[in-house]
Amino acid sequence: MSDEAVVSDGLSRVDQPWWRSGTIYQIYPHSFADSNGDGLGDLPGILSHVDHLQWLGIDAVWLSPVYPSPQHDNGYDVSNYRDIDPRFGTLDDCDRLIAALHERGIRLIMDLVVNHTSSEHEWFIEACASRDNRYRDWYIWRDARPGTVGGEPGAEPTNWGSYFSQPAWSWHESTQQYYLHLYASQQPDLNWQNPAVRDAVYELMAWWLDRGVDGFRMDVVNLISKPSDLVDGVVVAGAAFADPSPFVRFGPRLPEYLAEMHERVFTDRPADLVRIGETPGLTVEQARRLTRTRECGLDMVFQFEHMEIDRKPGDRLSPVALSIPALRGNLALWQTALATEGWNSLYGNNHDQPRLVSRFGDPSPDHWSASAKAVALALYLLQGTVSMFQGEEIGMIGATLRTAADFRDIRSVNYLRAAAAAGLDETVVVEALRLTARDNARTPVQWTTAPDAGFGSTDPWMPVAEHPPTITVEAQRVDPDSVLHFYRALIELRRTHLVIADGATRMLDTGQTPIMAYLRETVAETMIVVANLSSASQPVPELLGQNLRAASTPLIQSGAYAGANSLAPWQAFAAFLPGATPKGAP
Ligand code: GLC
Image 1 (tube, helix red, strand yellow):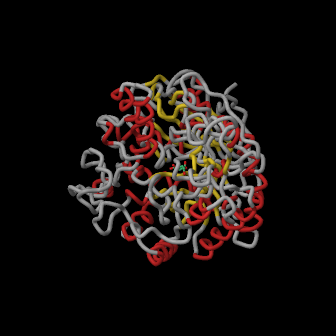
Image 2 (image 1 turned 90 degrees about the horizontal axis):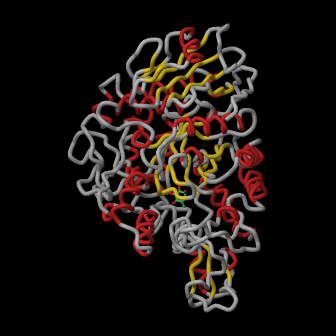
Image 3 (image 1 turned 60 degrees about the vertical axis):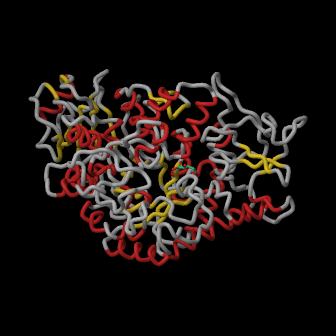
């Protein structure tokens, strides 16, 4: 970890894009609010809660896919990019949502899923019709491996596994070739080398922008460029397939495609339209390269490294103990690398990750509230754009997952199936998934203390997580000390103090303690942020103590006060430091 910091000029720039100090709120439509009682959330449900979003003070909503889809991957398998799935509503509902958000000063960011389509998209249906169909080359087809019989195990063109525990190739019997899918077999990868594919994507993006949306969150966008020659990868011990990531996570033409997208879609449009790239596996240099200037095509990355600190390397579904020093080190690495060029997202959970308080906090009744606040404070006062997830603002905890039958997500289901085929003990696999599965984040939002949690259906597609009545919007709205009010204050703080958007970050060395402490500095001011990320009191290291004695009254805080020499469990706060103080490391 480096604590080198680059201090910006400290000027408040009136021309800085909104997202530098802004907060984006992700809505996962399946689980937000159900207006018609069919068990699935929908657009009218979202419309009924826009006042909550306004009260919270967020700047933009990122809406997970609501397009027509067979829902194999909950909408990340799009079968028509220019419509709304009837399960979620209509295009009129979508227009109403755009208008209702805009009236409240909130932007709408659509999810753009164009690394792959659904296998039910008409492009793929056409492509499957014959080898000489005009859409054939819109996808990635290969013959069976020489000397093998297509469709038999081992005949796949390469030994790649998909990210959902299957081979990355599926055999298409009637045209006698394999197609590539980095995710489920129902999610064939588009062939971005084909200019017609790129044209079609740029056109559909323009179509949504013309409709009034304010940008895109681009699903796994760093995977869109594949090398022309697809070759075998390395199969690590114990794995069934090779990981394709080394070949596809920063493919040869990725920067070119993103620059072209900028040129074709955004040059003549307002500069505040945002482009967020979901980019698993990028290095800091690659991230910088894609977000350095607006012409690069992305305004920020949404990378995963801090989400992998408590996972077995290469296996996102196997947990290992969380090390706060390791987390701190990784956050510092990204802060420093993108300090003056490029931009990062700050997030701790989303629809693909377990709930923040269950993972980095302590959901037990004694610590739930303080830990939810401390973790948010430690993470969201860094430099970057906050991307928070529905229900996070009330400290929602993970799903109640007891047996294999409780999992709905295709990734969990495929993983369980593969584990069973490999002869693994199901109880052990379920125990791991209970902590790591995406299902954790996908339970209905708990709006009220009513039996359906105010979600709107008595039999929702995923059961409401077991929770105390305090973990509801209703209960927390009337409690000024709640997690909800804390989030609101934090969002406001980010907007008020430009040092949070602009300042350099200097991580303070707190050794092997679970204390995260850092400075945010411009030439004009220094903010100190301290968080004890543990359920035990911690002695304050000397350098930190010197800073704390000089700090002003906290701007925001969580947990009890434990005196000058120690931090109470989950005690966290931010304060300004006056001019001449002991600050950074020696
Ligand atoms: C992204 C989405 C995830 C989806 C995958 C394939 O990572 O966030 O939910 O399964 O891409 O589209």
